[in-house]
Image 1: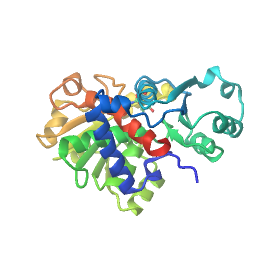
Image 2: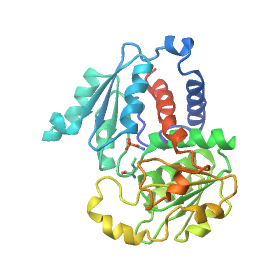
Image 3: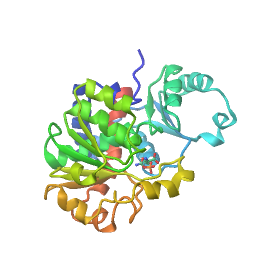
Image 4: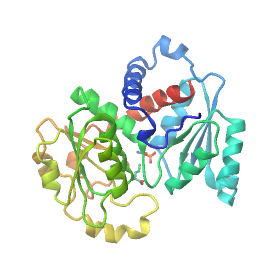
Length: 304
Ligand code: CP
Ligand code: NVA
């Protein structure tokens, strides 16, 4: 059966741990003669498909596939027949005949599911409205490097109950980290995703008070208040998230050794202050770099 990576739940817990180990090895070895000679994707091509904007995801997949010896085929969906309404089922058939894997950034998560359902090659979710699992691989690699473990690490999510929040919820189920979400009314995570994760043993709490979520945590993380596709809601969201900025006062509520993460792009002065994202506790550049290492590990796992 074809393996896909639609959400973090598509991996077994031990597979995820092995994948993060591999990501660490790839990070340490990058640029060495041994790494340059190791081409697990030699002779393979991967379609890298975007229906939304991207900087990090595009660069990390394109460079990562190249470094593994494969051929990335970057497609901006609007420039393809996908943008003219060719059915996803037919597109999936075409990808299956031409390439060895597909990464897909889109809107509704049902489109990830539809592409995967019709594809005999692995489909990797490069962000949907509901999940961003590739980002979580990088974030978990970062947390593990900083804290030495994932089990029991206390993480505060401050802001929108969005695709990133949902993937942190799945990460809690898959790793044993303890997640405290602070989201305003109307912007809470999908209850079905929360309940499923809790059913798998995830330690996740939900409040509307950022101070409660932040108390003593090891990791503080947030994301934009207006995700791609929600631009028309910007003003309402600015009002709803008033008081949810991660600033220096917020960071003082966390453990003194806490790190700050953000998937980027960030809006300084909205969800995070410049002093925090550009400050000593921020690890956002390591986090972004880890996209490369973690996705290379994922590609080797699924296609290598
Ligand atoms: N974090 C992230 O996915 O960044 P891009 O939107 O730039 O790919
Ligand atoms: N929640 C954001 C993440 C961007 C990487 C969005 O979906 O736009």
